[in-house]
Each structure stands twice: as structure tokens, then as C-alpha cells.
Amino acid sequence: MEKWLAAHGADLIRWRRHIHAHPELSRTEFATTEFLEERLTEAGLTPRRIPGGTGLLCDIGPDADSAPRIALRADIDALPLQEFTGRPYSSTVPGVSHACGHDAHTTILLGTALALAQMPDLPIGVRLVFQPAEEVMPGGAIDMVAAGAMAGVDRIFAVHCDPRLEVGRVGVRVGAITSAADTVELVLDSPGGHTSRPHLTSDLVYAIGTVITGLPGLLSRRIDPRTSTVMVWGAVSAGKAPNAIPQTGMLTGTVRTGDHATWSLLEPMVHEIVDGLLAPTGVRYQLNYRRGVPPVVNDEHSTRWFERAIRALGPDALADTPQSGGGEDFSWYLEEVPGAMARLGVWSGEGEQLDLHQPTFDIDERALAVGVRLFTNLVLNPHR
Image (cartoon, rainbow, N blue to C red):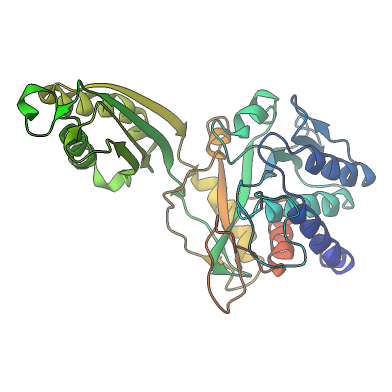
């Protein structure tokens, strides 16, 4: 492994910078897919595109009939966000960037694939999953599962960049590491009227205020707080004139939870609470509840496997990591097979810790080699 990294460490950086400079939005990752396909084919591998033309699957090592097989996943899409890093390899596509860190995920999996391709007699089989469209709903993980990505696979693993962890450290935990993320859209309707005579109409703004405070508050009393469930409004609109009760209004927000069982209860509970809050106001409404992704819940065996691979990086490599309120469509794979996601440190250890999805986000590129070592450790030293 170290010999391969010594020979190809500069290639990892070059590949990452190429992908970073040429980001593509969800389900339009045609050039990225072609770039990966060419590198894999040159290494003697046989990648196959999924229907739709973006995203790849590729198997390495023994087949599933003769040995266990794990999947390693990377997401390949970018964000609709202008980059302001000022780097020489900055995005060349206006309004699109890899502020999500997916360029690093993709490069790490590509490097892992090419390193493993040179190693004879792997102890387990490996399926490479280069997934499109992680940044949209429904995510591309659903497309990959439909294309057979989990067929014959026993477990799946992935890493995600973490700018709060220093390079060389990797965080993992048993249980939920991300949250389910659903969207609530509430459209309200009233006859409207004069603010001097609210008793002659249905006061739409008052109704909005009731839901703004009432829904998050009542959810917090109906759901066990240990599930890390939170409801937050992100946008509200209604009216223009100070002396007119508006006829229409809208609220949008998100509901998140780290508990899979709670996720299944949220939609009917939100409908019930909103109906109870608005019934006395006389305001009509339409509630659009859109389920997003389940929480990523790391199973214990897969997490211990990850911990073993992380410890092999060095005595201080393994780090604790909290549950995130963000959503990740890696969770759809875990509806099919057990697995785990870890957080890969990409902070240099100096200066500001820039967050993901910021226009100035970038990584310390030493993390690429760490990621390749980690993935190959998973394969070469399987946890029985």
C-alpha cells in the first residue's frame, strides 16, 4: 500500500483537482463518470454505468460465491454554489462547486480501486459504488440500489469529509451518525379582510404564528428528546400591507430525527398537530409533507470493522464523533444491508475550520492518502 501511495500520491492530488475544477450537478455527472470509467478501465477493471448514464459500479476480487463482498461508496455530484477559494484549481463552472467534499470522496475511492487492482488474492470481494445525485431528493442512492448495487453485497462503508477533524484522524460511532431530514410546506388560505375587523374573517397571520410556535413546541412534547428530533422553520411569507389581513401565506421548514422508528411516526403526527392548531382559526390549509432520507445508523459489527481499520492508521487516528443533524442518502443502502459511515478529517490543524457547503470550503489534500489507506485497511484486514 505504501509503495503504491509513494508512486501515485501526486496522482491522487491531480485527480482530485481535475474533478474539483470540473464539478457537475446531480444527475448531470457525465464527464466525471467518463473520467472515472477511463481510469478504472486503464487499470484492467470492468466498470459499468447505471441506467441514466451517470454513476458506476465495479467489482474487484473474488466473487460473492467464494468470499464475502463489501461495497465502498463515494458520491460524485457537486453543489449549485459559487466557489470563492481563489485556488488555482477552483471550479471552472459558474455557480457550481465541490463545496460538499465529494471530489475528495470520489478521488479516495478511485485511488483505492487502482491500488486494490494491483494486489493479488484479495481476502474479500469489493464493489465500488460511484454514486450520482447525493445532493438532491430523492437521492441517487435509490438509483444505485435499483441498478443492483447491493446485490451480493454483505456490508457497505463510506467516508465523509469532516472539517472539524484534523487530517489523520477519523471519527466513527455506533448508531445514528446523521439524521432523517423531511420537508414541511404549509400553504394557508383565508378570505382576508381589514385589520380593524379580524372577527369578521379568519386571521391568517395569527394562524401562521400559532403554527410557527405550536408545531415545534408540541412535537418536542410528543417525542422522546433522546431521539434528537427537531423541527425548525426556514421560510415564512404572508401579506404586504400593515392594515390588511392577507389571503394567502406559506411556511416551509424541516423536521429531523436520529431515530428510525420516530421517522416513521413524524408525518402523521405533524398532520394531526397542524390540524389541531388551525381548526379554531378557521383558516384553510394544505400541508405538503415530503419525506427525505432515513438516518444513517451504523451497525455495531460494521463500526467495529471501521474502528479496526482506523486504528491501523496510527495510535491517535480514531476519534469520537457526534451525531449530525444533516441528512445523507447513504442511509438508503443501509435499508438493504448493514454498514457504517465514518468522518474523515480534512482540516490542516491550522487556521479557520471552514464548514461544508460554504463557498470557501477546501480540504487539506493529505487527507486523500489517509482515505485510501483507510479503505484498503477495510479490505485487507476484514473483521470476522
